[in-house]
Length: 545
Ligand code: C2O
Image (cartoon, rainbow, N blue to C red; front, top):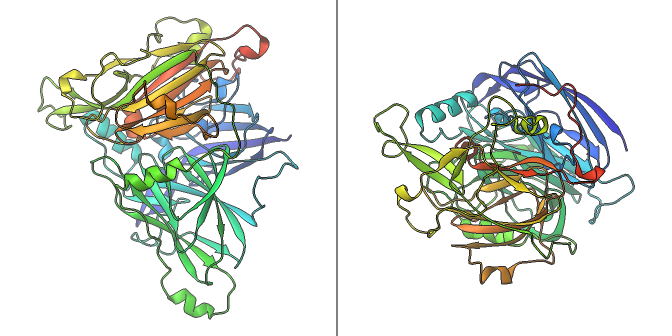
């Protein structure tokens, strides 16, 4: 195993997109940030130097950080933010994980531009369970605002309204040639006729699930997050913020140029960015005249309609682990969490702070609790130091009110209560969670991400979860293991994991507008008795609030 040392200098740099130059927060001057390429078992040491004017933290999305929550990164959860002019060194070892992951800022909306790929190759000498591709290409799908994203967030939080939608989607930081002033910079991927390449697709967009496809080419899905999956071919994939998908593509078409494109999958009946980002798959060799090929427009892929939930669900249903897996068959904790938006009634509906629908403010909650990040200390530091008053451990295991999650719910029934509430899990307990979209305000997919763990996705369905009939349909044989899974719009998803990683671990919707409104909770997995069951001591340079 190797040790990788890096310095990540976080600073504002001019970045030009859509005809305008913005002072953009970057890492080492790069947008997207540097790609980390490591192997299972390697150690990574990254000194993050904050030369920007915002507090910031970095998160290594999908890594377990076993017994080492100090390196996980969500601000005010496992650490206080790195203040401007300060630094913090993230040290961690990758244990039994390989696949496509990514890293991103975990402070308000800074991840809009502060993100990069984290590719974990198998240990030396251990092969992929599919033929070795000729080359591998990380594809980072992102979202771009023609304003400082922090201002977009600030305005939404101040007015209580929904934030402005993005102005472009991006592939590896570039909007592509369908947008103004973006043609020359459109990303081009050269391929040789006949070769097979592995696309490591990452949805790093802030607020949007996406459809992705490549014209005339079949995609063979071979992995999601850090799991290998049973290969299946498809012409389009759906991917939620936080998720990754590995696909093989064989350059078996007439030598030419083909668009790779992504646009929104928007199951909510709400305003969204309906633009399309492109890159170009460019055959290098071929019998026909190269000049002629250059001049003709590339072929465009067929992408599903924006609200094509049937296609999205059919895709997700095909994702199965490549191998039989060991899902906990007995559960110690049977949890049911509602996830959804809400609206807060304002006493003065004409207030500038109540610009949501009909003079309300947007909020979001899990089991009617709208998560509030602490400010004075991080949860982990407060827990470790035994500092009281920073959080409570009374997050409800089931919603306080039951109702029909598919219908029109009266607002009075559902006024979330703000709180910094954790749910305590005993070390080693076997946990099942059913996550149910409430369909309040919008019926939509919520890509739910759990820190510190991966879980098996054992079931999903539309409508209300039925505890007497739905468990009979659970998949205990080959469910995929993931770190992020969407609730079907107006439906539920069931997951299982063993709480064998002590610490405080955030669970939240990876749509950042929802996170900002409180769609989060955290687990406190208590220390066990053995040496491997306790959290390591915090690093000496851990920032203080
Ligand atoms: Cu990728 Cu809590 O995030």
